[in-house]
Image (tube, rainbow, N blue to C red; front, side):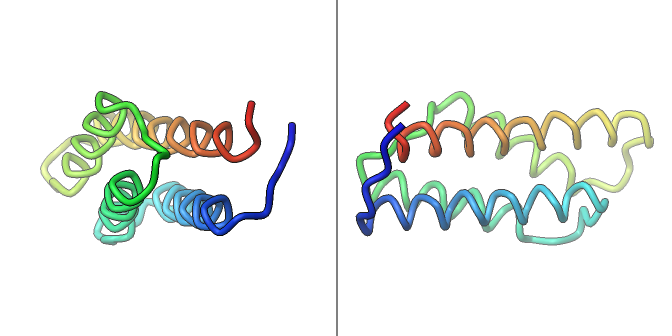
Amino acid sequence: MQFQSSSLNITCLLVVALGVIASFMLSRRRFDSNLLLFFYLVVLAFSNWSDRHVHEILYGAGLTLALLLRFEFMNPGVTKLVMVLEIGAVAAINVSYLGQVFNI
């Protein structure tokens, strides 16, 4: 593990911090918050701006689950399953970025 304090690494850590905050809001069942969609917008912009990329399937699945959580007609069991899968997708994106920052 090696950390180089560059502007790209610090920006990547800020994106990870936004993902942690979005996961925390999601775990508090704030499904009407746009913070999760803002996280995916920031990930898309950061991936296009830098050479730090997230796998397309992971990004697409996470965004699809985030948009699916916006629906209010799902029963509580399905909502909880989608919420757990979404937290897992955000965590996988965060782990991917942390691996790129710390050269793991």
